[in-house]
Length: 320
Image 1 (cartoon, rainbow, N blue to C red):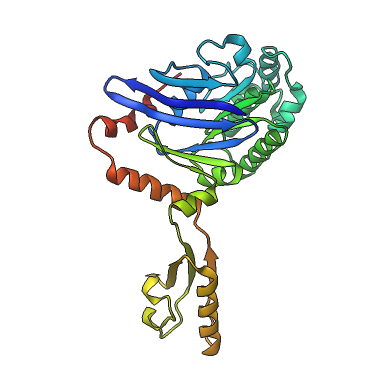
Image 2 (image 1 turned 120 degrees about the vertical axis):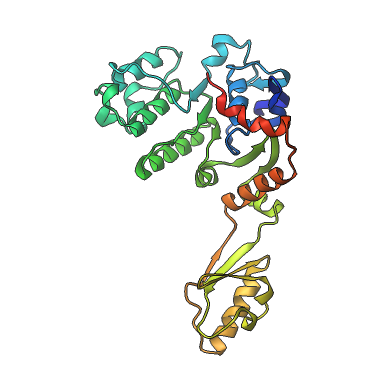
């Protein structure tokens, strides 16, 4: 069953089409990452789903509600972590989490939320004394205290150090294990690759591609890369079978291939027979970043100038 069902969503600001006929489905219990360059339409799309903005056309259903008319019954079932939230800096995290817990019929325990978000040690400190990363954890704490069925995470780990970021990932994974549905926007491609069941890439307010990271790589035709340090005294033309596919970057050779097992075996047999050591030999599958850049680059190459091109600026100016 779908937790989010969007068909033909459009949102226009003057002559700029921020969202232009977007379709999106998020199933119950699924973690979906929404990716795209700045101004692609991500924030506007999420704001419509949250009920902060009204669509100009199209149909939007979230947890069976129209976000514009769902009222309190709808808001009690969702959680929202904004890119940046304002806090009264004389409060403490414990006080704010307790306050927000009172908005929901079945909230999580305050102490549990503080522990889950790594705020135990700062629970009774004034907000004005918190670092940027600690304030971001507080954003996350307020988003999950209502024990939401659907959680919107808008750039949730911006400003986190590596340890805090890993803890946030573990929190998202624990929420998924409990059956929560999560819609995540992020610029961290490794974050999407790590957390998401499915990735939706958008640009100019439209969906470019969607699927698992593996499926996107296959659909984009992204090849696996074999790399190694060029042996002394040899040229690319001396390499067996893969020379025409090879690219030299400094002292390294990179070979893009759709048959990595066969090519690595051929290279290894060739090198072993000649007593050559292929130093720094590595095999890397296409990353989500590779696929993302290919998709966005292709879209930009065929995109129109004018109104559609200007749409990339609309999302950056959107505020709540």
